[in-house]
Image 1 (cartoon, one colour):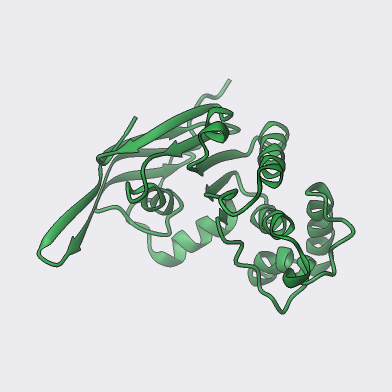
Image 2 (cartoon, rainbow, N blue to C red; image 1 turned 60 degrees about the vertical axis):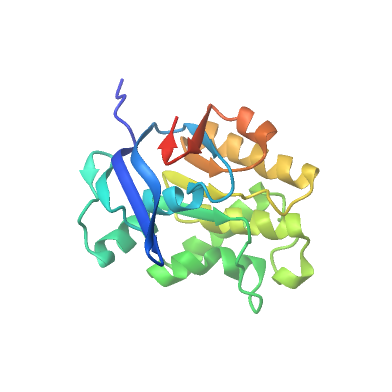
Amino acid sequence: MNNSPLLQATALCKSYRSGLDTITVLKNVDLSVQPGEMSAIVGASGSGKTTLLQILGTLDQADAGRLSFRGLELTGKSEPQLAGHRNAHVGFIFQFHHLLPEFSALENVMMPGLINGRPQAALKKKALDLLDRVGLGERVQHRSGQLSGGEQQRVALARALVMDPALLLADEPTGNLDAASGQRVFALLRELSENLGLAVIMVTHNMELAASMDRCLTLADGNLR
């Protein structure tokens, strides 16, 4: 059995300048993520949780440390190479859904594949299947303004999954949802993790949700434990 990590972060460090001060956000953070594993990251507001998630997803770069995916080094790669990595392997879902209001739910879900040049017929079939799986099979032609907050977030989830990522990074995905909608989004993530081997790293303030994950890590004073 192959127990090699999907994602491996080693000694990640990150600081920001604020006037004359240097604010250290991450101090030698280590993290190993296995395929199909669901991990929660909790911590106080401003502790660097979103910064860490962005570094893990290669949307930002650490000042020091290493990051690898399936054993392949990502540290030092060019932005086009990192963009290719994200498009092929990583899905993102945020607290705010960031749907394009002029497009339907179906078009929003298809968008990453259209940008990637995927064949439209197969892409549409995939998007329709995902929308059906998130319970929106009857809402595919509705624009975002015609959907509830929970429905919009489920469209965003389907969009994050349309390229079949191995890793899903979720930043407060249930933060703007009522309890019932939040639980439904989490249940969908759990199902996809178990059935598809999808690894999930979720930043959340919801401690009940965090406790339902495979493990819960706390980021405090720049340290992850």
